[in-house]
Image (cartoon, rainbow, N blue to C red; front, top):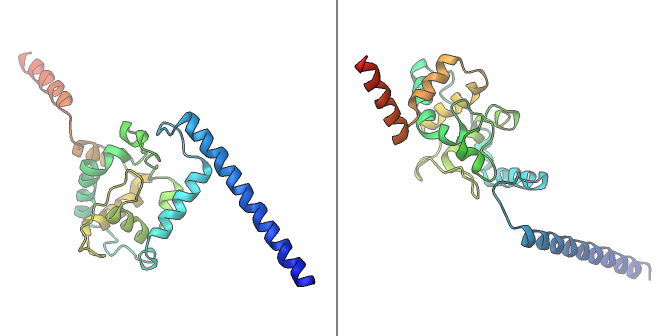
Length: 200
């Protein structure tokens, strides 16, 4: 009799939880249907937590423990990483890693501040894995090739640069900015300025 009462009581609790989840999900669905989804909104704390958990689950365990085999990076490797960052990464992440660019701020979720604790707290292997494989349902593309495992020196050099973003010198920042592609408008402005100065 006691066992039967416990089973019935347990089923009642499970049923109540299921009902609460269904009602909560329905209310959330109605709110979304009324206002829609917009990339302009900040992700909720719950969305951010779920996204971080999904990113963590997507990585193989062995990736987390990898150490950067290029450390300490040579001056040449760092210079190449700065040029690569300027040419490929700064459009979303900004030259300084802040994520404060029109594209980076227009993504959902926003491009993260690469200098901040959530990124700097990732292991070398986690950063490498994200560069190589991207993150689904975000703007982060996969830059690695399918046949590469842990051997892409360009990506490892970027990991080393990411570690240095919080303390970039003005000279290093300017080097990254110089590597950023220029739009036709910017090129035209430069040409007009050069022509004006040459005419003086």
